[in-house]
Amino acid sequence: MVAATELGGQRQQEGGEEVVNYLDWNNALDVLEKAYRSGLFVLIIGPKGTGKTTLVRRFASQMQKELHSVNFSLRTRESHLVGTRTIEKGQISFVEGVLVKSMRNGTMLYLDELNAAEADVLLRLDEALDDRRQLVLKEAEGQVVKAAPDWFVIATINPLSHVGTKELPPQLLSRFPVRMRLDYPPEELELEIVKRHVKLDDAHTRDVKHAIQLAKSLRDAAAVEELYYSPSLRETIAFAKMLAAGLAPRHAAEVVYANAYDQWGQVEYQKVMDMITSIFGGSGR
Ligand SMILES: Nc1ncnc2c1ncn2[C@@H]1O[C@H](COP(=O)(O)OP(=O)(O)OP(=O)(O)O)[C@@H](O)[C@H]1O
Ligand SMILES: [Mg+2]
Image (cartoon, rainbow, N blue to C red; front, side, top):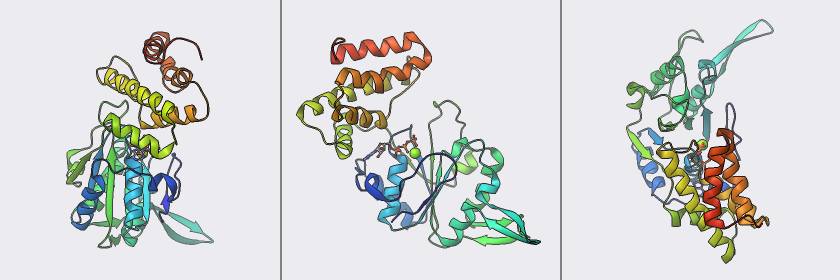
């Protein structure tokens, strides 16, 4: 059972199907387990939609550890992590933030998109993550919080090519001595993953294979900055779901892939539409 707490944004499902369906195609669960047993914190580096969050939730569920999550953004404050002082009926008390709770209870702490955080927030984290694994609460009369021995931390960062990301300061990088790279899976495994989410007949399987090829071309084009956007596994799964719901392949590709590029103008959109036409044929729906 995964109890997920989320600060800011992104919906989280509790335990559930997503986690059960996870395909461990690159042995990531084994590496995570070995790092956990060795008390080493882990950094996962990978572009969006490659299964980072699902992997972490699956691991927490497998280890039967409670999961605390923080989704970092420029708006994440120290108080989210550490806690805040409140005054109620004249009594001052301290409400613990997610970092303090996780340390005390020895849960699994998931720091998502750590490289989106501001420097002051990172500094505070750095204090907790160093080898002493403790935090001095200047917010609560200098109280010292010591992490439980089975406290475990996994962070993710998006590669620097992503708009709006900064590099993780080397100091903080060194707190996560196990680094895993999660990229898009090879084509045949991407199909396996989609099949774990959507039931496909033979005709649909063929169309999904084509969509995976399209996604791969779009990812390659984005990697060399010919296009602005790189579709993820999320899009492949969405395409398969739209097919299964009865939409024609070309139309599904248009709404899932091509239309996204309209944001950057007609030229980008048309480039993608031309690729779709060459794969799925002309305008007949
Ligand atoms: N190995 C896998 N097995 C099964 N499903 C997967 C796998 N990898 C990704 N998925 C599915 O792909 C979708 C995106 O995965 P997820 O949200 O975990 O990616 P992410 O890397 O955390 O993305 P982001 O960087 O945008 O947060 C989800 O629906 C997830 O279930
Ligand atoms: Mg995620």
